[in-house]
Image (cartoon, rainbow, N blue to C red; front, top):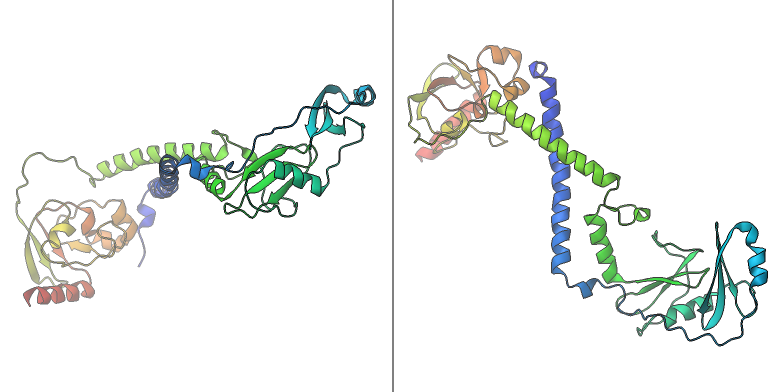
Amino acid sequence: MMSSAANNPSWWRVTQTLHKWLGLIVGLQFLIWLATGLAFNLIDEQKLDADVYRMSDTSAAITTPLANPDTLIAQYQSQGFIQLKLSSVLNRPVYAISTRTQSYWFWADSLEPMRLTPEQLTQIAQASYSGSGMMNTVRAPTNPIAFTAQGPIVQIDTSDALGTRIYLDSASGRVLAHQNRQSDLKDLLFMLHFMDYVPENGINFNHALIQIISLGALLLGMSGVLTLGHKFSQGQLRLPRFKAFTSQGKIHLYSEQAELLSELTIHPGTLLHSLNQGQERLRTSCGGGGRCGLCKLRFVEHAPAPNDYDLDKLSILELESGVRLSCQHPAQSCKLALVTKTQHRFLLNSTNRQTI
């Protein structure tokens, strides 16, 4: 059977498809925003805290004699020396030298380069931790970490109930963050809420995915307006009437051999709705959405103009003979004929069941 889809304007089919896919994608993202927003409001903030066992830095005052840093400053003048900063690591003074391209750390009491061992990194992590868990071996992070560090980032896991993980900058000895299973949930909610699926993106409210969803929402609205206008022009939608509906005439349903099978009262809605009022006389699989094509019937006379769904589901021969989808046309006084033996058998079986 040759389809008449070619008669259906291609722009309309494209608009319909675009509208449905945009509705699915944008609607799903709106549900994610709703769910994560509710989660942030309903979950106690302490249940998402990453710093349950984190202690503030309480470095002791520097009492060790300091070496003269002039030689270090002179050494890095050629690299664009910016500043010299005094700090401490494990209660030992440290010079931090910043240039235009890099930072360097030296023990301030000896001017030797500071190279922290795994044992020293573990001591730094332990000093920032108030929990009772044991410290595990220093290792590289298994997942991408969006921390700013001057050297390689290392991770130390603990054995506490929250699964606390401590991240350090191995070059400076700085504790970058504490994380645990609670904060993992918080990070997941933030990632979903801000569509922040790239760790390096950071908290950015105007990245590419947000822009794409915004454009998708705009196109969804525009395609919806086009769809609404097109359906009105096709007669598929009508403004509600404020006066009571009065039934005028009957729907006469005939078999393929022009045998009168039923006279049915007209009800508000489509022809399919009136045909199935009280009992299911015409079976469909899409519920009257114009998708399955099972509700097609032939107008014995005065067939209405086909709409897009008719053009998409029916062949040219069917259209020319007056076949239309009964779910797509308003109920009216008319003569309709079944077009398949399957429809006739279903109607007879349905009538017999109703009689019994």
